[in-house]
Amino acid sequence: MPMARWFGMAAVAGVLAGLTPLRAQEAGASYVVSYIEVAPSGRATAVGVLKALRDASRKEAGNSSYEILQRIGQPAHFAILEVWKDGKAQAAHVAASASARDKLKPILAAPTDERPSTGYAVGAPKAAGGGAVYALAHVDLIGAKKDEGIAALKQLSLESTKEPDNLRYDIWQQGNRPNHLTVVEVWRNKAAFARHEMAVHTLKFRDTLAPMSGQPL
Image (cartoon, rainbow, N blue to C red; front, top):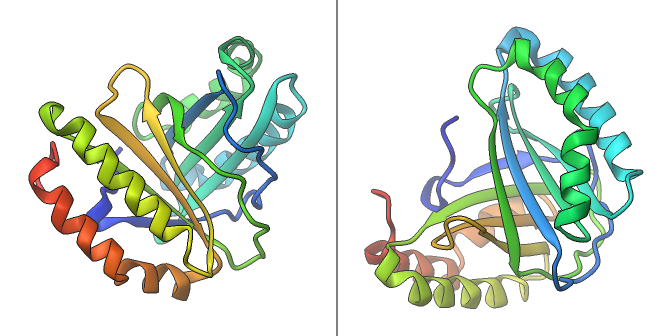
């Protein structure tokens, strides 16, 4: 599934699930982002399956948050954001959710892209209304520049959370590839996201990241 990078960041709306309360980062917590692309004809089926999966997952022991997102402009693209108390709880969920995921297989347009992670920089989100917009970005850093790039990304997070319409700004670090990170943002509305894209600290970060990125811009 084509993933949006920082410079072509794709906005996704939480149309299937509103922002759920999250505790601040806990030691040992397990974070997972999964990207799902289904055939256009299977979109309605996917929505039903994912809603049911969300509701069941939130009742499981050790779940802190389970959100389903649908991409703006590409409604057959979905993302799942999961937070679990620890790896044991997340592993139990994998077994419990196998049946629901099997229901998606006949309509998948590409294999599910699942990225187990740790929470590098995670805070408690603010309450979001119906017009809130999520943005996900994948940051791939050159190995030799990993620490420098992560420091720049953390600074961007600190600056972005000061924006009045920012509701959440998390950085998740992929467990098996620590130079790969997922940025999870929530903004009050599309206008707030657009302002962030042109903010001084955002533009500065883009210039800083360019020579550190592991993928062409």
